[in-house]
Image (cartoon, helix red, strand yellow):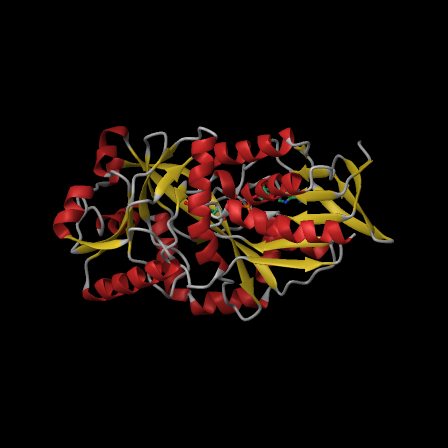
Length: 404
Ligand SMILES: Cc1cc2nc3c(=O)[nH]c(=O)nc-3n(C[C@H](O)[C@H](O)[C@H](O)COP(=O)(O)OP(=O)(O)OC[C@H]3O[C@@H](n4cnc5c(N)ncnc54)[C@H](O)[C@@H]3O)c2cc1C
């Protein structure tokens, strides 16, 4: 057991914790910053199990943190990949419309993307779509030529290396258990010993509400885990997809709809769907945790959310249980796909923050409390935005360190 003193303890070695630690160590070179991660490696949860897309910033409410940090984060992360020789494929993305309603929504998305400052965004016709994605059926599409794919695990390990090279300390296999406060100092209990510190930064992703609660904060939201299941194409059928192919999202639903994603290793994914998970890190159907299920079911906001989304919820369960239903959704974009073209791939789990009224918290949310800063909501496009969110949180910490 190690017991020592630090200036800042960052909880969570996903993209957000690592980016925050990296930025803060650069702002405060003499500060003793310790990052603790409960897993044996960095980015084993959301950050290492996502779609690998560097989003352009089209979908998000103008003026929101998501819109601002996604557009800026796209540019910053693209430069970061070039600087550190991290693979990035600028394959572009099409959002495909077929029905009259989708065409109208596409125009609104185009306006929104332009307002958010997405460069070179434009609506293309059937012929141009066929040149970009020959196997897609679509009357029209919104084309974002700079959307790209990256390896977020590699990005996370590079953030960790930059942080450690600047003097930061990272402890793997070290779980945050709780905190006691005494005269402006905090004693963080971890599974590998206690750390005395002045400031804790909570970047615990799927567990961020639990960590906040252990520090006496009641954020009025609960993290509800939603599993996203993917298939991948068998090798001989990967050529059906050249880049990123998305449907026009239904504005009343929080997810983008099942889509096709080229990955940097050349494989091609289809998915994800969105299924309520019975464990915060429940990557398989049978994964179950009594305490996580109790945490979901005891929260009034969950029942209000469930009541509002009963229809889509049943649709998603059917699509999860029946591959044919999943493939039917995909055929809306690429009609020639067959069930035998797809095999299951590892799932991800999204941390969805829900408020007491049953609304999904849409924008990124960071809150302060005595002795702590909490990143309470960092859903997609948080990987794309990770440099900007990390800088934002590090700036908040920098102000507090300078004032102390
Ligand atoms: C299926 C899926 C697809 C996605 N696709 C994209 C995409 O294409 N592009 C995009 O921009 N975004 C995407 N996202 C979103 C993005 O991946 C996440 O928003 C982002 O990775 C969140 O990072 P994080 O650091 O907050 O969380 P995490 O990556 O979950 O990291 C939190 C870390 O905290 C650790 N931790 C938790 N509790 C403790 C504790 N008590 N003690 C110590 N450590 C602890 C965990 O082990 C974990 O490593 C996707 C997400 C999912 C799930």
